[in-house]
Amino acid sequence: MRKIYYITTPLYYVNAEPHIGTAYTTVAADVLARYKRLAGYEVFFLTGTDEHGLKIARTAKEAGLSPKEFVDKLVPKFKQAWQQLGISYDYFIRTTDPSHEESVKALFRKVIDKGDIYKGKYSGWYCPPCERYISLKDSPDKSCPVCKRPGEFFEEDNYFFKLSKYQAPLLKHFKDNPAFVEPSFRYNEILNRLESGIEDISVSRLVRSHFTTKAQRTQSPPGSPGEGRLARSSPDTLCRDEGGSAFDWGIPLPTDPSQVIWVWFDALINYISAIGYPAKPDVFNKFWPADVHLIAKDILWFHSVIWPAMLMAAGIPLPKKVFAHGWWTMNRDKISKSKGNAVYPAEVIKQVGVDGLRYFLLREMPFGLDGDFSEAALINRYNNDLGNDLGNLVLRTLTMIEKYYDGKIPSPAGAYEPVEELRQTAEKLAVTVPGHLDKLAFSLALEDIWSLIHQANKTIDSVKPWALAKAKSEHLPAVLYGLAETLRIVAVHLAPFMPTVSKSILAQLGLADDIRLPSSAGWGKLPVGTQTAKSQPLFQRIELPV
Ligand code: MSP
Image (cartoon, rainbow, N blue to C red; front, side, top):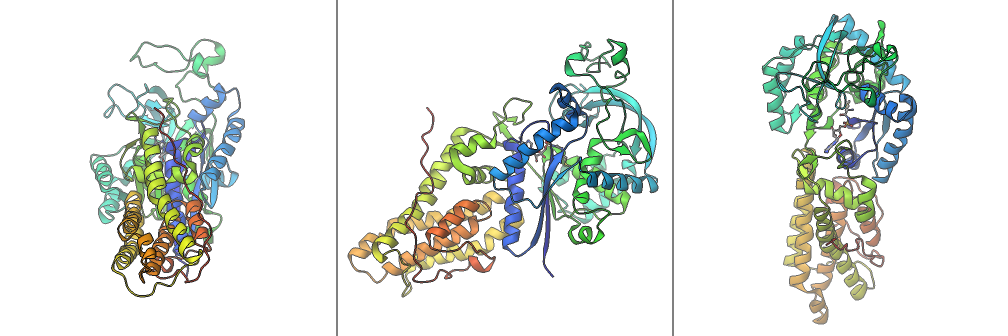
């Protein structure tokens, strides 16, 4: 039986083009998907777009388009960005796909049948740009805990989900599965919050066929209950005024078309609708439960509490893991389109190439923590790690093989200590790199790969192959074989991170790109006599702007 690996990214809101933050999760998921495919798994890598809700409806209105016209314009930009970044997703889901809508209705019905949906009055504060409720316990000033914008008050009859009923089962699941949420400090945060009690949540919105634009919103005095509400300025806007959430851009409730399903309840279901819930039980049972939902810390509560409770209510097993990484910041402020500090992948790719960007994102900050993005850090990593360390090792090794052996891989006759040391480090990588990747410790995997690259460069400096050549030393072929084999193994481990660079190193060594893990990571697989290709510089030095 083939091993299965199911990995997901969040569904990104299509209010703006993808930036470096959204690219981060997607690249990380891509590295894991590629790594697992090389290790023989049948991978299902899911990404896509979150297209309903007030945030999108308002942004579309401001652009003068219907929500559907607006999202249809944005989705190709996501697909194009992922193509540019070499993202090897297996399926791109849109929450406006009819098959997703059917899944959502089916799951909603199951939860109703379970008795976990009831009608009530919602009255409270909400952040439309983040599509999240604001609890006055956490934010007495009614601002959004994530984006800090003032919340908007709304009050209306809604359907509620009995989230509180799942407090005890969730606590049990957390206690029984200490790796359910990672990193562990995030697990503890959620566990503490769960222990302090959870409330039922509104999971629907009253349908209104109109809503106002930003310009039409009143300037209520700060702190007044109506702050941020919609305008009460004309008969036409009167009906839109009973709470800032009024809209109709969502999936109708199967049992009451006067309400649409709350955008989060809708979007989370993508993780099962994409694999055929409930229409294709064979496909669904093959891939579910997901191995890992990759997300950032700001949406961990939705994924580790609300989503699991929804699944429990529907009698579906929970995902194996939710991993919440940190934020890319700019001068310590979260990078986002709305803050005006977004960096776009295409701009960075122009400077350092696709693989340069992929490398930087996963090397610069440990997965799980926050990190500041700067052009200086990007260019330093590119020039030093890629240009000086990796690029030079490739160039020096292939130039010497060309010069001393007409470009053919020589036979490594006889053991030679510095080469044995390279071999030991390379063999260790075959264990440590997969170990780090299985823990999503991308930066540690890259550090280990770079320890081999550094050692190989040092070996060249200390052994001085040109001196061995001059002295007609018997060690020269062993050294050059060892360096070429090191490069091959570096290319193997880099393949999930930097697919183009890996392929290019293998091509320069005269090898095909047919990596299989773990066997390709073993030492001594490079066939003697292989004709190498003339070395091309992999990275062009970039001058730091002054
Ligand atoms: N639509 C919801 C998710 C629904 S999942 C069923 C959403 N979308 S979002 O467009 O706001 O994207 C959130 C995700 O984008 C984060 O979880 C993270 O993966 C990524 N990031 C957005 N900005 C980021 C940073 N500045 N840094 C790191 N990741 C960031 O929330």
